[in-house]
Image (cartoon, rainbow, N blue to C red; front, side, top):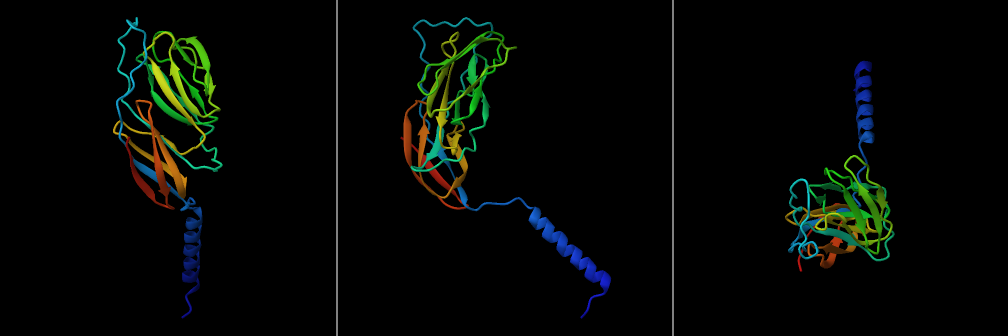
Length: 225
């Protein structure tokens, strides 16, 4: 049966609109998967301060953030994509603590340490992967940006307040996450394959295992010493 001209035209327009809508949808890659799970957290390593240390502060010192772990995936012989190398992470100094006190970045990323307190702070590190000293600066002064170009654990301190500390894990891999207070984490956008999964615990001890990432799926895992 032959359709009237106005009906045929309407059907053609609807079909074209549906095709355009499909073509406009964001592309989805089913080649990537992910890993989620729990790290069983241990006791946080206490800050190293001199005997008899009594900080003199204008306002009360706030509590340090709850313990968290850093989790990441590695695979030998992999040329890691530089998807997170351009990130700039802000670690605020507030309440006489670094917030967050634990962070992870990919090599090539930058970190700034703005001062949110009404007193001077000083930010420095003697860690081998990245040594730096930003000197003393006020709340009103911008923090210099530090670029981290070598992998490894960087321990950051304040020269004025000995109890202040921050741990930054610099990684070549872009597949990493910081857990929440219950040790839960999720890493997405990982190509299928077998990986080493590693974690830096609050005690600064490390644990590792193996995990297989499947296309379009999220693999569950629990990490414990």
